[in-house]
Amino acid sequence: MFNLRRLLALLILISIVALATVVIRHLQQQSPEEILSMLPEDIDLALEDLHYTQNEGGQKRWTLDADKAEYQRDSSLATLENVKLLFYQTGEFGDINLRADQGQLEQETRQIDIWGNVILNTERDEQFFTERLHYDDQIRQLSTADPIRFLSPQMELTGTGLQIDIDQGRMLVKDNVWMMLYPANSEKK
Image 1: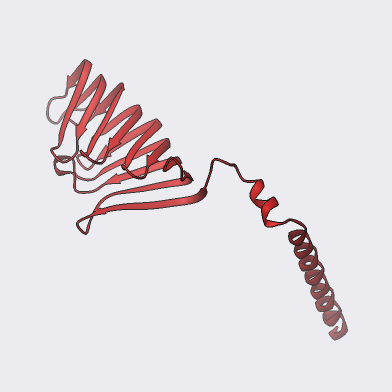
Image 2: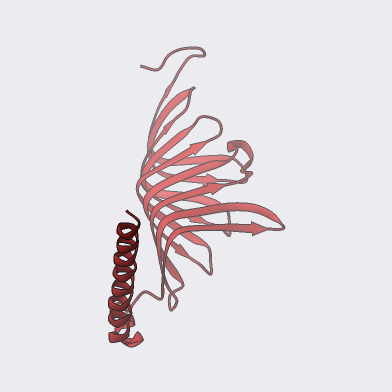
């Protein structure tokens, strides 16, 4: 029994050494230039599980999370996949949560475009749905020219085009506005 254990341990050790030798030889065969040449030319940096927080005056303004980000240094653009954006202290709306399939962050101006199943949730139990949304950090405004749908416990609203002033808590629907108000304490149908 004791010899069987030694034999098994020796076989495991030999297997590990053989595997390490194969891996090291494979890595030595490819030069760093060959490895880099396999990467896309227009991507300077690729990240998974991106978490970026924008601070101003020691306070969090917004946080951006994405499952994947590819950064292009020449244009200072980062393309994003599975985007989550959280705006803090937005006045009337409370914290605002955004989700979308895709996005793009312009790093220098902090302009963010998101698209694909865009859903916005507020702390006031409100939801916005659209296909594309733009955030301008200079004026703290969300906007779209696409159709939108807004749901709250008090109403349902649809329209085309939207501007949301985050700090002022104001919303402007630009065209084709249709709204249904719900009486207090009633169920939506």
